[in-house]
Amino acid sequence: MSVSSDQATPVSVSSVRSSFTDETSVGLERQIKLLLIHRLASEPRVFVLDRERLRALSQEKAFDPTLDEKFWTSGYVLDVVVNPKGVVKKKTTLEVHAARPGSEAITYSSTRPTAELRIS
Image 1 (spheres, helix red, strand yellow):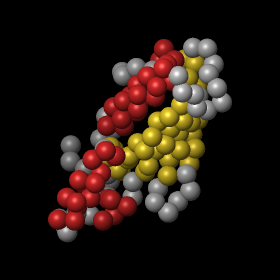
Image 2 (tube, one colour):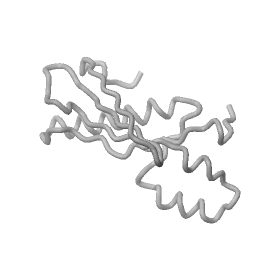
Image 3 (cartoon, helix red, strand yellow):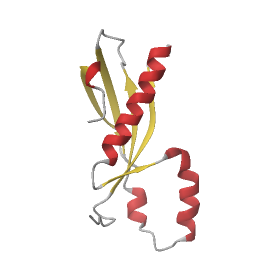
Image 4 (cartoon, rainbow, N blue to C red):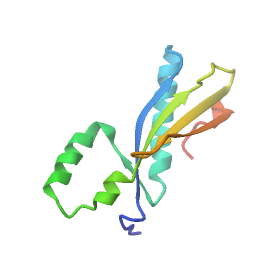
């Protein structure tokens, strides 16, 4: 399937962090980031931008003036907080802040059983 730049939505996962810093939380942060990126990448019109390689991408963009500027300025940056109000046994809460350039962040919060955190 081909997606035009006006239909594409670039998304960058800025950070996934826990409100607690123990071994379990560090592993959970890593797992949630991978699950989120995997899920977003499965959407045909969503393009997940790798933050670690963003500098190389910006250099590549500078060499190609035909790249659509609208695409590069229309994306979302996601910041995720795991269990922002504390740990509840066998449940995980994610608070996702989604922001676009020049706009206020939208916040979405969801609590699910921890066992449901898996790639489907």
